[in-house]
Each structure stands twice: as structure tokens, then as C-alpha cells.
Length: 143
Image (cartoon, rainbow, N blue to C red; front, side):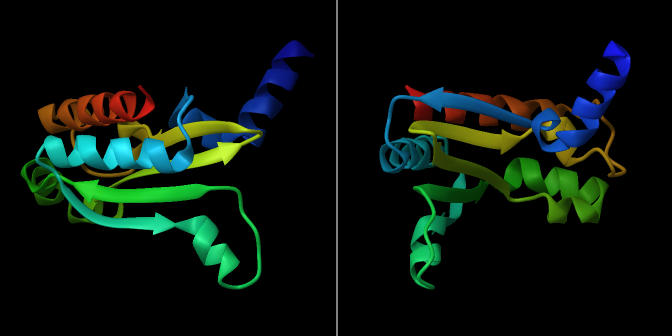
């Protein structure tokens, strides 16, 4: 019975298994500003900052504060796409900062899950570097 319950919970919540989320006391805007600064300071390229709540408001719908930052480092991402062009579906990197139940959360997809179905060697050094960068950048955003 316990095994069946655990299995059903695992199957019912697959998104939780492949994301990393950290909470912060910052507002969504402040956390996103800190993330953007950390990404820029690290020498990565910011491609877009998307305000999902503003998009919802533009069609008379409402979302709590929610922003997505799309960014990358061609030095690392290019290696992934050279190994498997379909890595371009997962890249550039994305970090979502949102408010839920009054708490600001910073979330991104686990790197191993991001490339799970690719032809990329799971031991590729650049995967470790991408994972470390996401960890460092989101920690800075949460401080």
C-alpha cells in the first residue's frame, strides 16, 4: 500500500522531480534584478526577461508576480549543441522567479533532466559547469 501511494505521488508530480527551487525573502522584481546582475557579472548573455504577469494583464487576466530570465554562455552551450543539435531545444537556460502563497521562489530545470533524452554524454564536463553556474547564479539571486 505504501509503495503504491509513493508510486502514485511520483507519477502525479513529475515536474517536481526535475526542477530545483529555492525560496528567497526578496520580491520577485528584486530577485530577478539580482539574478540579471549575477548573470551579467558572470559574463553570460541575457536574451530576454519576460514578465508573465504583465502578459496576463494585457489580456485582462491575472497572475501573481512571475518573470522568466532567458540567458546563456555560448562557450558552454555551443559544446552541448555540437554534441547534439537538439540541445538547442533546452538552451538557452531559463530561470523562473515567481510568487506563490506569498513566497518568492526561484526555479530552474535540473541540468541532467534538461538533456536526459539527448545524445550528450551524461559525464560531459560542460554539464557540470552549467549545473554549477545555475546553482551559483540562483543562490546570488536569493541572497
